[in-house]
Image (cartoon, rainbow, N blue to C red; front, top):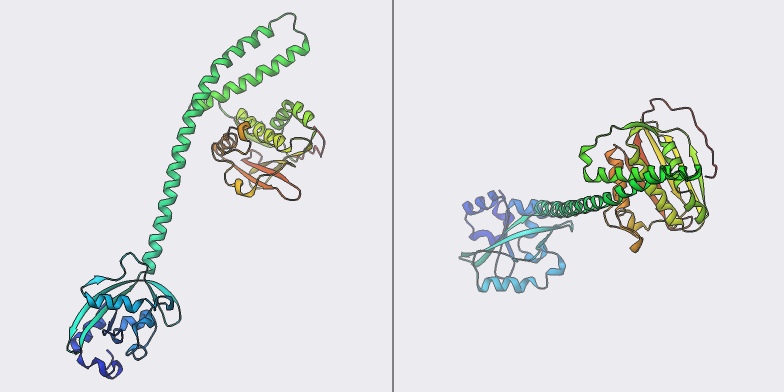
Length: 388
């Protein structure tokens, strides 16, 4: 404990036992007179504020608070002395202490009056609550994140119910289309070209029917996944969208560095690439270039890239494009296409990445990365850059 000399003559009224108890307190303790002059501090005050005792004794207590608050502090001190009682200081306010090196810290301060021979003194117990404030901020952040997660969960559940309802309603007209396709197929007047179109339409209807069944009961998949070439799926999708390419004046370039063999549900990936390529067509509107590529990543994965020269996606929208019901197409879009795409890719053990720019050479690139069956890189199947 410091000697009375280090405390100054003003500390002569303080019993040695009291000073010992003060130094043993866990919080910084500062005792001031009714003029706000510091009469005594303990060891914790030195440690908390960075001053030696002799630097504080006899100085105004305002030196321990930020300068911007010093003007109003004497009024608060006088108000406490007029009705002194044990109480926390600044209830509902953010209190700050000021260290010798100029750093501020959030503080919790309790005031209590002390009647002495030298008059009424005020004891201030000061505690640094920086860690508690950080913990409270972290708890608030986690709480906000949990709220957002719950909202998202509720939104997804609602979306799932709606999609299942729509899928159920779609099944009825699909049954009618199956019957119509059968009648067309057995029509003796149908020529070879007509039969080919009927077969193509029948295959698309069956694919749509399969998608609605998966939506209604994705956990009851009855058909096993099969080994499929991603190049074949992309070619099939391009064949179906050929009229749209031609009408919009879009050039399609393919660069398949591998066949891209994966074990999947083929109808799932057809839906993925049909959605991505259809979105690319919409983004380019009239004239443009669509680039499709397949390559091994060298890490047991195969990557399919769909790149367009369209208008691009604004940076502020990129984080939301996979959210249900988010769309930039107005009434033309439902806002569930990319959400469904992301769900399919992740269900297949893959991931989907996106890059886009609306400045300079605009356009969007989607990378679909899937587990590959190819242990060693397959012999290159170089299509080169050729038009569809």
